[in-house]
Length: 251
Length: 268
Image 1: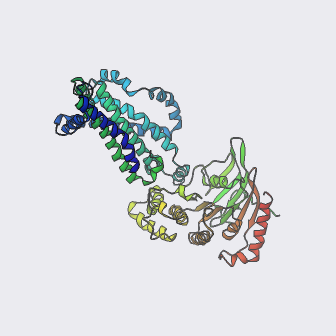
Image 2: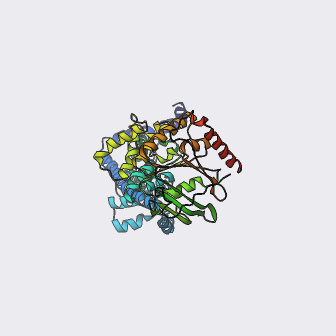
Image 3: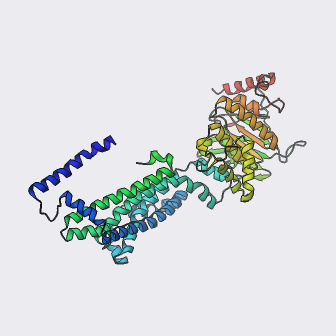
């Protein structure tokens, strides 16, 4: 808590200086707003239905994309982990596709899906697929060989071996992957909205900037930051309560 | 030193019951490295065989070979008359590293249940059998505990309970008490002898503790290293009923102890 307060000194001083200079010299800018105005806009957003609609759109698109991307990533990662030859055959394909910035496929995705939810969901799914896949494959590789031997000695079939040994063993690590991917999903969703898609908080940000309402713009930015922080905090809490032994893996 | 290598012909010798597990001229090679060379012996039903040897003599490899976890590079392993290629359901293994062999996300009861689930025991029968197995190893009141909440001795008991749930004909043990303190170890040795006597299971016990080998075994196979091969086989001339204090004072025990130390001493 002390460290937190110490860390807050500089940002708070900067905000105070910003507000002071706005009061002293009076800013009439199309790009900057005084902190007090931003706070007003920040609170006012809570009463605006269009703000809640935008928030809902961003969350829905990010969540749906995350669900598809993470599920596909988990299945593929586990398959690669269990079948190393398959992983080797697919490695080149993965290594070519993985470094593609998700935002670079927006033009193609627009051609395929047009504007709207599908566009955003597809790109979020693409972006979250790879980290979940790679972390899941690594997690399968880290299942202790003794557990696999126990499965062999007990003559567990493929499905029970997966369901009773492999999946429970990788669950904690998969959850970490899910949490990292959730943060990524929000970032990508907002990016797609800022770049192209007329949906959600990113689009609201662009509209505020485009119609010269800097206070609204900064307020939306603050809400986006708060949303990202909130989602991560909730997932960290769930993770800690489900897997208390996981501390060494958590950032 | 007299080395009584028991090379058993097909069908076994007259008067002896057919061997339950038989290994003939088996060798194991990892890449170009010969780990085990020309191993032959057989185990009769209900017999308790201990294996000793300096490190690098392939004790664990021999156990894994008998389990069917690895295949011999040459020779054969025969279980109940069938050539062993995959682990058999009624051969159980007690691993030394119980911490890795138990499922940390399942309770004690859940870990025992795993073996019953694998054997497709109907759900209705499981809980009674789990309770009986846990109480047999002295964990009757700890069924709801997780392995992480148990001491090393308790975890090893739990692993033994899971092995017994397989209703094994053969129980293979790889230094199961090696990581435990002396008191716990002695207690578990006695419990193991009781369980083996009750169930009539055939025991195969790898250890680096020479006195443990004598205390538990009917027969002791001593391996030589580089490559691992049978150096000597000792019969344990002690009555089956063993006692931690008196058995260890019997002249035959001490004489055998001396022989084993002499054997091991040649390699260290």
